[in-house]
Length: 238
Length: 282
Image (cartoon, rainbow over all chains, first blue to last red; front, side, top):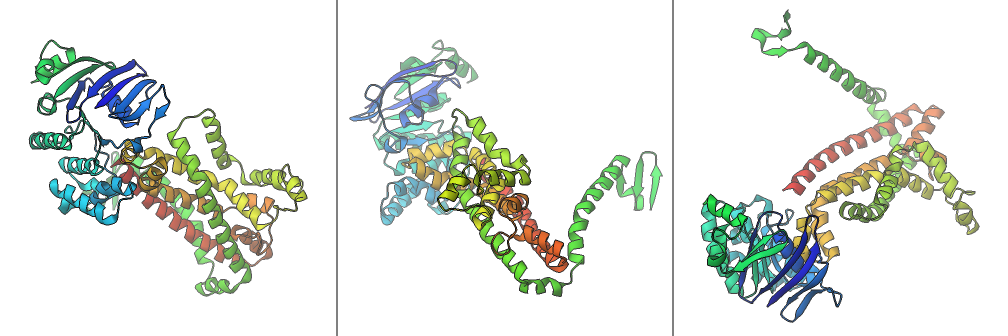
């Protein structure tokens, strides 16, 4: 289980978040731009340091102000899918997916087997020699997912996983994404603006406003009118 | 044939080229600048025969200067690369007290006249200098040696690489570095496997600029290192000496070599910086 209980002074407000996510459970974070959703992911991944509190995953302590523990990002084994995928532009598809395994000094043959398996699963093996910059949005997402999966993450963090993809491709990718997260059997947190994503992927939805969680529950409970302005706004747009 | 029609000058058949007076003035100005720069450069090539030019490659003064220039300028480039890269990266990514001051000092040699740089180096590291007197007591002499040539070049040329490297590192989206960290790369591994490859074109073009500036260094070198053939006489100093001594062919030959290198440098930097922008923004 992932336990996050942190505060951090940000420029406009105090970020103050308490969440727990069980193994195999997917939590969807929604809220306006600048409400602190990505900060939640960064604090868990070790890319931003909280002022107070702790972050724990099962028996591993990622961060604890009281004991001074602060694991660097490279020791947290987190599968983080960045908003624009952040595929390394100077590397091929293969090298992107192999990157995490190479950093772990895995044997060459094992790396090849693993990368081939993942890229074949995603239907991307034919493009293994292609430079990451030459891919479409959907292809980049598949490569970024393969790269995050390659390291057998203990935790999944996905920041707007479908926003850079056209509407038609989103439908099938959303289903695949659900299978991948469920299949990994680890806690997952997904940041999204899309009600469809939330309904399809979430076991639980948390709404954020100015650094705090203002509502939490299953999608049917939370994603209805009258909960908060942000959700009202999205519902009206449908 | 051109005929003036109101405000437009029509050139050629049926006005294929319509040029307004303001464009004519602009064209003339461009032509003046173009010729003003190109004419002296071309004149170098017109004032020496190919035979005399290639004959100068048997001239000891020319050969010594060539050898010394390459050894010192390449040493300078390597030292700037090693010392300047961490500084450039830190200034691109982190804020710390006194950063503005450090940045200003790094840029200072660009505006200090080279002759002043030479005197300043002499006052610091010369035999009677602030630091030099202690080096002297320890039996180390810096002034008027090849080491002094490298120091003079370092002083005047380091900002070119450090500035370019800093802006190249700034152009690398920090998300790439974050992604590398979450995938298991340490800070150092992230720097070498992710940041440097993305910034590579900018780094190389900065290093070429520093090397070219070091190669052309004259003022600080002659004041701090002196003008001794084979020891401190680099190509620009040899140009000065051969000119003084009336050996015009050696003088022109050395100049042509430097012009050719300058031209290659400009083209290389233009190609590399265009590639760098494409890379970092993708």
